Image (cartoon, rainbow, N blue to C red; front, side, top):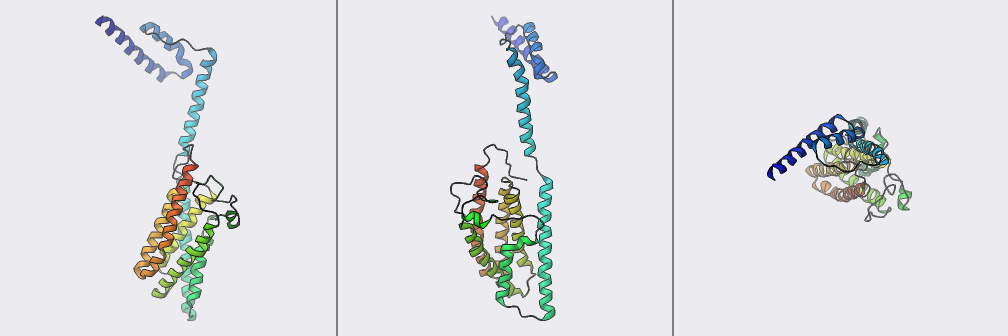
Length: 288
């Protein structure tokens, strides 16, 4: 009895080795005939031979499944060209803003102008809502009128939104009536302390705006829902950095930027959850 079991085990092992070799050397459509021969030689019983229709469908199914796997794999490749484009856009925008601020400082010094506080406030308020004018990319925001009506617009309601998404009217109120004035007031305080516009501390906030503008390209224009997740985290981190830099010069100015950081925390959670509810297929990776 023991010899019989040993003999049967040896035949099974031989069949498995032969099967592995056959699968490596032949395709799925060529395997059945050779496999049957090996089973007969080894004495190992096997399943019944499939019908012709089943045998022909098997390789086609494998080809289709392989194509889907290849497609998903290619979707997950890192788009280095897009990353380079985003980085270059931020650099170009920062250079343009720095040159603009330097020109303003030069004009003030050359003509001996006394710049009122309200003018500086207006400058930074405008930069807060229109900094994208210096960007080489399309940084389009959602259409305010469509968003307030609950209609689809770039970055809002043009995708499946989480159930806890705030009403559309909430976003322009936050950005235009709360966030922008706080940025302008805090920047005006820094200007009062340093005496010029093109200052390294103020440029930290401008970097935050540039990163935010580029994120709008990723999320609203190109609709890269996965890449928007690390993107919004970069926006959030740059806001914290700006708040810290402002605090070093004028503590109250840094504190004025904290509500922006809090709002961006909520925005980051919303962007992440939006990616989750739209990623049922698992193909929207969190990088470009």
